[in-house]
Image 1 (cartoon, one colour):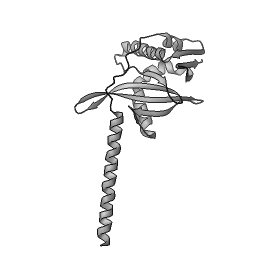
Image 2 (spheres, rainbow, N blue to C red):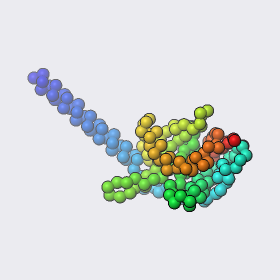
Image 3 (cartoon, rainbow, N blue to C red):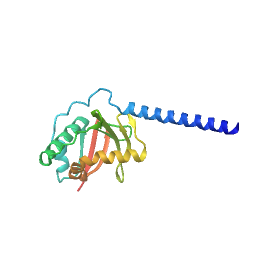
Image 4 (spheres, rainbow, N blue to C red):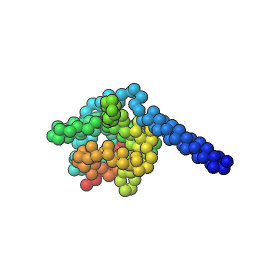
Length: 184
């Protein structure tokens, strides 16, 4: 009788665990799946951001999030003319503690491609920029999975980041935009 009770208890625990794991996976897919709303319309290109980042002068400048979006579009379109490869243009916004970068990408599934979005929140600390939060759609990615996901998405922007990102010392979010400080 004791073996029977032990077997039934173990069977019930395994069934409960499998249902729980399946439920978590379904919730993650539900939150990560696009909700039908396409990404915001492309911002009008502006060279204001690239001009500031490529200038030799040190200083600070305020950019609205619209100007950040337009500047990112300009930098990517300008850089992709020579390389041929063009990653999707990110959009920027204010996070709870830092700057949000929303990067659209296409996920490949057996039935085709689906437009998804990666959302990263970066904080400017004394040691540079650190990743606070990473999400796939509305689904939050935990610790190392989030860092690896961020690294794989940002690898597509490595050439653009190395060209312009080195000169930026600090980025502070607030008042509907970002203040970028840079030095030599």
